[in-house]
Image (cartoon, rainbow, N blue to C red):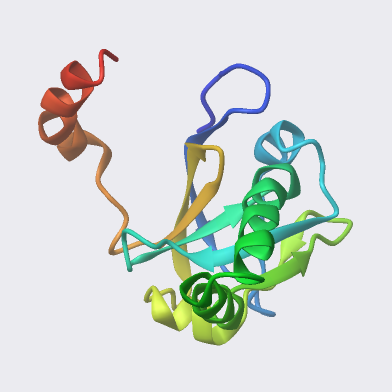
Length: 151
């Protein structure tokens, strides 16, 4: 179910199943909030190994520009760019709103057939159905963090 948020905010939790060709249909509400892009950028989450991030072009381009500039003069940044490039992909969104994430990325996060898409404000997270955080468990876990952040 999608939650209402300000324009551009990607919100909601969407149980999903890969189709026979192993494609994911991005929910129309999320595609609309991303500005109906023709492609997305997919990479593993750098903080949580069990999920993938699907970034809209507008969100990822500024980050990539910073990496490109730094990689020209900084060896560590250059190595990071090489690593991120090797574990990421740019995917076209077909006319039905579907993307086909490569099998190696799906396997990396344990997606076999059933998965959960979670709107995380500026990106969509892809989780296996067994690894996705449970909604009800998060309240207690994050109450202190929400207070500390003034949320």
